[in-house]
Length: 267
Image 1 (cartoon, rainbow, N blue to C red):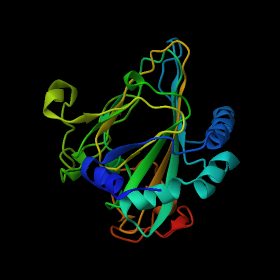
Image 2: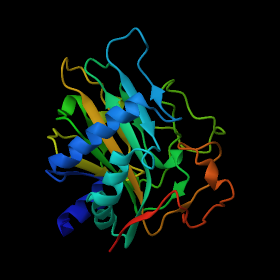
Image 3: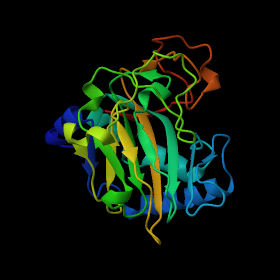
């Protein structure tokens, strides 16, 4: 399913486009799940677009155990195997799922960030699979800084709603560099995407997302987050996102062996 050259590309760039990877049936299943999720949001659902503005940017996560369509995808789709092969892990656990939807005429962008500082996870055999349910042209898709997962740095997480830093002590993480002001100094990856395509990226790869200026095209995306052999629990200097209160007894470096994160694929 995954070639050696694709493993190498992922290892070097920290993000890779995989063409025509998921059957349309999986997209239909996830679309049904997103509509259910929208009508019955979870405790972490967030609305980013002001009520009187055009468009609608919202997200929600940690609902896969209660929404059967998400559960079906997590346990039965090729996602876990793709994640395991690209990260060269012998098994993969689901960390969580994250739905991000930008309806037509949504102006809000997703700021530059990387995910690992938000999470209670350290490790290198980790990745997200970003699967859009709709065609996504470059101008409303994701961008990645190639190789940024290899910088050896952790950048301060920021809140998408306010664009302010997390309530972490100053200096505990590096400040996020101004990528847009120095775009010519970076190799920026972005792609036009068709239905069935996905992007796999490392938890430490810097990325951002544009708004959705199109008048008719929705931008529904289902992200599944995966953790492999070397993933361990990480103590952060404040509440993580997701917070996972069930892990309060865990300490730095503990194996992430918990029913919240079942093994979904074994090599």
